[in-house]
Image 1 (cartoon, rainbow, N blue to C red):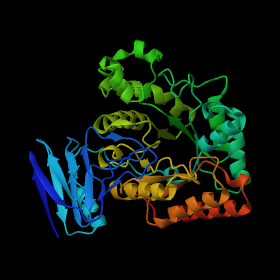
Image 2: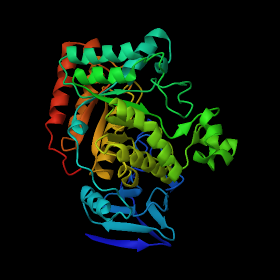
Image 3: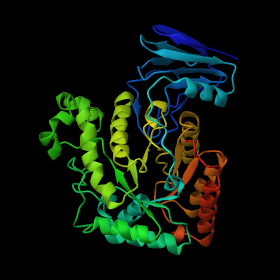
Image 4: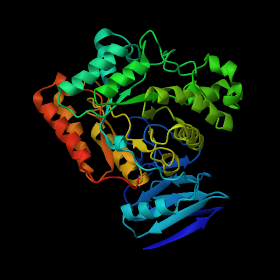
Length: 431
């Protein structure tokens, strides 16, 4: 085994044995991080999407990983991969070492500031129940958007069904649809409760706590759709995003993204404070879909805001990238649609592998047991759950969204066994 640190400007290449594992190259719904065809990828221009990992590549027993978030380029002609190291960047090169050991060495050598490791809270390891796929099930039956299927009664029914199935209570996440201005997917930028649907949000929190649950809440925090009131009210939170061309903003699905700045941390404190005061103890943060370095700075702003208000509140999001994940307590193995024609088995295993190698010091949110689609049949629902058992050492907690009472008692029993098995894994007090 040998390793060295190559300082830029420089380049380093090595032979491809079978394929290139590039966990930072993630396309939603695809096992894109295993590359066999030629490619040319720039670290900073390659977007983070679903479950994007660290800026490193591995093939056989050769490994190279960028040690700072300053960028870099990786090029392959299908036979050989070359890493181009720019000025002010460093590349860790490892040869002849087992893949897992190489990743451990890389993670230990990464150069970037990190917050002090917080003491793990008991509720961070509890099972999590998320309303989203049940919302999609109701939407499919009624011909509506899942964003328009959520209200106070829905959440209470969902919680009661969990208890009636004999599943252990844990975190219960109220997903997208609780907020005002839900269409097409975002708020007006201020994240206020829709009081027509939830006339007493604090009361709902207390009801969940009385029934053994830990209240949790979804936020699609970093972006605002065109026309959002906050774009006019607080333009300093979006500069220079507002000055980008229509084509550039279209690349971000037409949305305007917050710009990292001290004022943004203060704004985020104002956003989260009322929900922490209500009793929410976990936030599921979504939609960090954009240039990697910018997304990392945005999650840092959210993490600093939340933990300054209450360091016991869990922060969870969907990128196990070593630079991004230091600003969350749990990373999400995000969004697998268990449907015919999709390589959902491969995608599930790829997401778990990326989480295991790129964020070993963080909990893994095993999103979602049975998949992210309500049309899954019982056989595939069970098959998907059993895939999580392939990574028995993964530091994780189980996540349930679609409830198995629509299937037979066998599905319920498999889910109960999955939850019990994950909760019996070794503790993560040093996370």
